[in-house]
Amino acid sequence: MTSDEESSRVNMPYLPDDLLLNCLARVSRLYYPILSLVSKRFRSLIASHELYQIRTLLRRTESCLYVCLRLSSGSKQRWFTLSQRPTRVPNPNPNPSSGCFTPCFRLCTRMEDKKPSGNLLVSVQATHNSSPLFWQARAAIGSNIYTIGESSSKVFFLDCRSNTWHEAPSMQIARRYPVIRVLNGKLHVLEIGMVHDPSNSMEIFDPKTQVWEHVSCPRAEILGQSSGFRILAKDGKFYVFGDKNMVYKPEENKWSVVQDLDMRLSWAPYTSSCVIENVMYSSKMSRRLKWYDSERKLWRGLKGLGKLPKLPNRYSRVRLVNYGGKIAVLWDKKVRAIGSDKKRIWCAVIAVERRSNEQEIYGKIEWCDVVLTVPKSCKLLQILAVTV
Image (cartoon, rainbow, N blue to C red; front, side, top):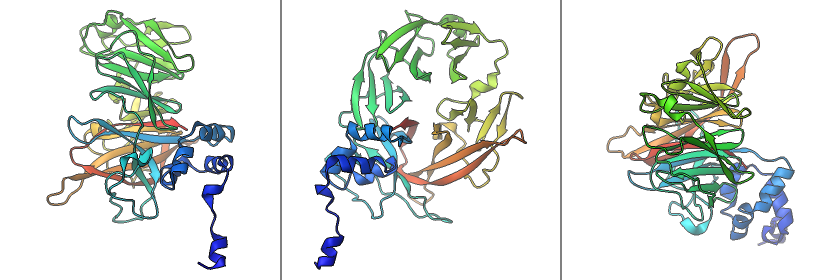
């Protein structure tokens, strides 16, 4: 090696930790899965709380996507996060213990009509996965993803800064089919369906105080003769659609009957809908994205999305989330090839704009691409956005 080549090399391992942390804090979180492959030291720094404290001080926090998949029937859930595509093809047989992020599956990068966006999903190798196997409720607050298992009072959360699982304080009552909604930075947990609930209450968890509290809930009155109800967190309130439509106002700690609540709001499933600046967006009504016009009380098409591929007919194959004020939408599509047992997961990020001179909302596609190729048996469970 010549002296010029030696002088051009930067001996990164010998830089002080505080300097490396300050450099890493200025890099987008999308690149962390790639950087964690550089060395054990990089993996340790990227998983450290010090790094995220510096990001907060420098105001470099950002929204990050996490996706929950079940690869086959009866298998455990797997978590993936959005990352930038590495310049070289990753090792197709990664060592799961090599770090908190690892590539998973071979990614199909050939696009018929455009260059790939550079985004892909990588597997999150959490250090301790205690999350239950079966049906769960999931919700994100800050940098944590909370999960509650079926017929369990235990609560776990994934710290998305270090990708480690931890156990949170348990609920006082085991809910058979729990449903979680986030309102004002707190978890609100209810039981859905015609099951015995001795408390007839809603439990609320404050991550700041780590304390659960009970709030009386007129569950029997809401259900009536119905087999279940739907829940919506919007406008700083908690709406419940059932035999009677009711709203819970946290500042008053009070439930009230809502007479003029449009039932069309309840048609949008939680996982295939999102709320941005008090406007609800959904794919339930058609194979296109729509938004709910609360003044006219009707669903309207989102303009400017002519180039967005048609979404699947089944809304269970589509997931939406508020991604830092933008819509992130994921859907799956089978690979149309003879004998293929694969399908592709697509992702699009869409900025939304309400134009002052029009009663319309326009969407702008920032990027749209295949981000993962998975077995045909894979089920898309949920997409969540955390702040890290």
